[in-house]
Length: 360
Image 1 (cartoon, rainbow, N blue to C red):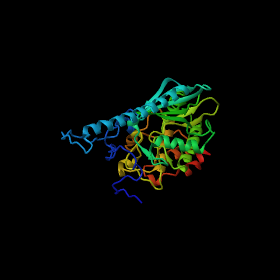
Image 2 (tube, rainbow, N blue to C red; image 1 turned 45 degrees about the vertical axis):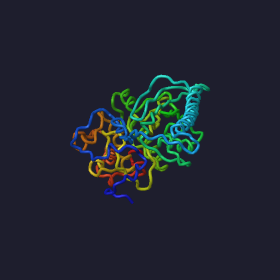
Image 3 (cartoon, one colour; image 1 turned 180 degrees about the vertical axis):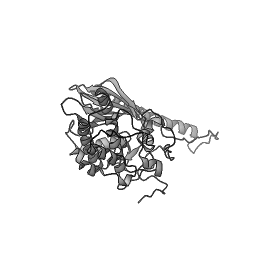
Image 4 (spheres, one colour; image 1 turned 90 degrees about the vertical axis):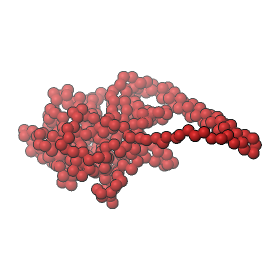
């Protein structure tokens, strides 16, 4: 069992970045821009410097110089590189033969997303381009090869929900391509749909309590299902929640698993990935956080922003500069206050939230 004094992070052992490891302070001013940690700085990397050393040319028994041998080896390497390049070109050609890419939908710390459609049947898709230097976390697949955690998680979700495109709360991964310096993920694109931030803006900056309840009930069920599958999204917020608007009842879809990870039993995380404005209080006080309590805190943040015409900030909330509307129903206030309990052990579990009277 990992304790706060352990040096190594039990939840993020495969993550390259260690830039967010130092303890945050609630007194420091947080930028207003809603950025994720991955937006602020990529992983710090170092490369070994190999100094050039002149070496005496020595002939072997066959009279071949080491320089000649090295040239021969480079010729073989060049051939391998040509084969790899051909494979990458083939992957890119395969993508272009199947999909048409259109206008950009958005951009975050892990890549840019474009609208598009599948040529075969004009099925709408979202096309996400992820530079490999922004793949912050990796996991070993069955063959031992390192794979982007985002791809691994979406493959797991797709495998467990085979044939259910458009049914599961997380949007489905349809196909993915590795084309050298970047990954291309082809994802389901619900139409018509807008993210929760835009949905709220279209409704006059805040949602009526009854509409917020419909969204929160679906969202809690969705993240509980992820937790049951040992998946921690880590960045549930308005921009990562799509609202399908094609029917009278808004439907919740979850997007952007770029900062997500697989959860081991009692995993404790000491590297913060997510939106700094929404950092759970325990990160400030203990420099660590867990999946369940953090996700419950995010439920509170989402609900707070849905019902209030302002962005949430953990620092401002802890400083009592943000307050919960008194005109909300007693049940809604109780749900919100429970989610935003500053001590993580005192927050309800996701299962307890599902049974909360306000959602029933």
